Image (cartoon, rainbow, N blue to C red):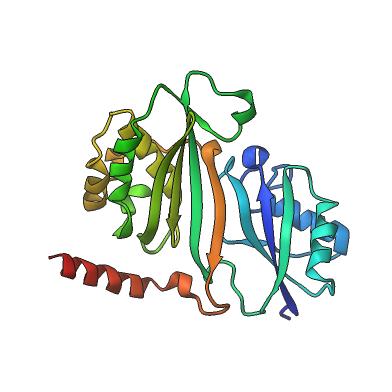
Length: 274
């Protein structure tokens, strides 16, 4: 029988010592596994935690939404306090909220924002060792911005996914891509409707290649046109990637999977441009 309640947990974690979100075999740490174990220990109920997306091993999250369907009758705040007492220090529940039972944490998500951090210097500071990719030397941030500008809008991003990606469509809408320098850290912030497997890491690796003058900024547009992954930059290491936030539309509307409308929008935009 379906569970009577849906509670959305907003979770933060340091992904260094986790093998991604989904529960793994015994002895392999995962964020979802830690949450499910804590729920069982605290509330005596076996549940399956669903996140807005899978994460690679080593990727971090500032705010990841995790849905739990339950029959336990506790206030949402009680879920926060109860779970955190049983969770390890590298993953905690920040907030929790009741959601309608028809809510779906994946298909109701209409946007996600990631940030990839690169330390452009000589030696990685010890306090940043878990959260930045060390790239020795300076990066041409202006050139990186020129490259990133080609990806804003609705495009086919088939050149920016791993061989293990199983997405049925490679059409995605990038609403904004910013490249900012904060001291010796270059932050690549990408806001889009959804992402392919390794997509942000491939984009970051390509932009770093542009910033090091290994590629021209125009390569960004050429990759969209060719769809050839082999001409792009490396897949940047997982440790520099952090999920910043996830945004939702109306519960049950499934707006996050409306790719037919996106295709119509892209076709109209191209027709207008010509």
